[in-house]
Amino acid sequence: MDFFNYKNNRLFCEDVALTDIARQCGTPTYVYSAATFTHHAKRLQDAFAEINPLICYSVKGCGNIHILRLLAESGCGFDIVSGGELFRVQKAGGDTSKIVYAGVGKTDEEIRQAIDAGIGWFNIESGAELENLIAIAAEMKATPRCALRVNPDVDPKTHRYTTTGKKETKFGVDIERAANVFAQYARNPHVRLTGIHLHLGSPINSADPYVQGINKAMVLIDRLRTDGFTVDTLDLGGGFGADYTTGQAPDFADFAGAIIPLLKGRNLQIILEPGRSISGNSGILLTRVLYTKKGGEKNFVIIDAGMNDLIRPAFYAAFHFIWPVAPVNGFVVNHRNETPNLPGLQKVDIVGPICETGDFLARDRMLPPLARGDLLAVFTAGAYAFAMSSQYNARPRTPEILVTGDSFRTIRRRETYNDLIAPELI
Ligand code: LLP
Image 1: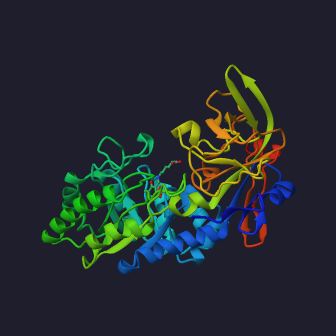
Image 2 (image 1 turned 90 degrees about the vertical axis):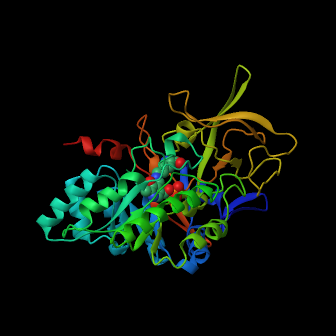
Image 3 (image 1 turned 60 degrees about the vertical axis):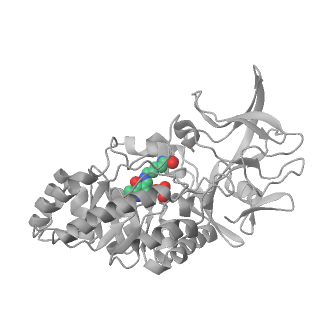
């Protein structure tokens, strides 16, 4: 669910008409709904309340400092994967003791910065990394808290590029090897290795993979405890789906219903690392039709946003629902699915201005008739959308606009041509 809805034949974000934002801010632009962010964070907290998890919002999905501030104010901690993300959280005024830090390639500099910042947990991805952390911690006279990321070899049934909990991926330590890592390092005085971390992949649209992963993790935790090790934390990672089509993602309550019984009374601090389930439906990409043309059997709709602004369709063959902001024939849809069943639709490819055939946001999509100047909304573009954008083809990045009720503000300005070359003026 989200706060993007049609009223009187026009799309609104909360109480602001997207036509107004386009007029004042131009296109292409990302538009976020503050209420959707906070609503999703609260729904997740409520669904898992019985086991009182620490919710560490995954910065990589949508890391604008104004969004991070909003979520910090809602009580969230943060899941980070780089020194840059740590910097973002600090600039947003987030509580660094509620940070979990994953990533297979943490540099010495990043490790030092994170120790200095007093982060909550290092999520350790290899024995070699842990050894390096121990050396740096000894030198800094710190004892950072760690969780070992285990690879449980569970199939999350998602795109192969975003599958992370299968053995052939680079992430974590094989669960069979985890006890050895504890035996080798858990008694080292320079670290406190007392947690287990899992992240299976994303998006995950069923509780099943979590159940399998948790069951495997609990066998490991029981064994470690029997062997005399302290295990006080279990971080389940992120991956909960978002509604790319209406009703696609299970409710948080469905995930919670399957997960809580496995964890209740096990004396563990539970951590969740949601990204897209909080941010995905909180944003859209607002774009304008530049031209339409025919090519062979195809009808092309050329828009002012491209794969540099939103790479997910090109990169993962991801589906994003697209619909006019003010459809000419009055066909508004508040139920988003892949084949809207309405008369008078036309099959089109929605493509960008980039010089690549892979530059499309939708292919063979049924849409109402479109003409130059029409505004389109690309939905569920709050996660891995602006965050993965680039300046490819020397295109300045879009602004980000945050709507709160009936007002909106720019939380990142549109880049200029000077922004393109500023780092080159050395
Ligand atoms: N925790 C860890 C350790 C992660 O690696 C990720 C995502 C998350 C949490 C958050 O996952 P989420 O809840 O957002 O699904 N660019 C891809 C997704 C890459 C996900 C990377 N890791 C996409 O556009 O679908």
